[in-house]
Image (cartoon, rainbow, N blue to C red; front, side):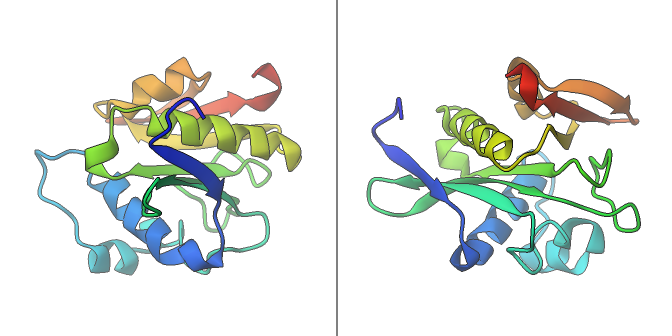
Length: 168
């Protein structure tokens, strides 16, 4: 780890609550928008299915933890079916990435470290690609592009992006 203020570890079933916190943080990436509350995120099937029942078979996640032991960010992968796709769904064999970092830790390399470690572990688990959906105005989009994600579909304000893991 290049930054000595945090370390990375594998996400476990005990991290389900924190993954939900990071999903809420990811939904609320834009401080200029009215925040969406945790209850609302969990009532909405389109967002809740990113964390409900964590971990399911095929789920893979990494948690960033500050030196004091508090989690500060997470990145996780989840497979979806064509009957219940995620926002960045491209195929049933392509897990979708979710990333959340506490606002006070954003812009310090935590997201990049989480993404890099999760991509490495995804290769170990036999995944060939990972996908995501990101709003174009979200500065995380630049991180994803810099890390090798390419746009495969565009909507009115967001893009679906894919990283081919063999090219890493």
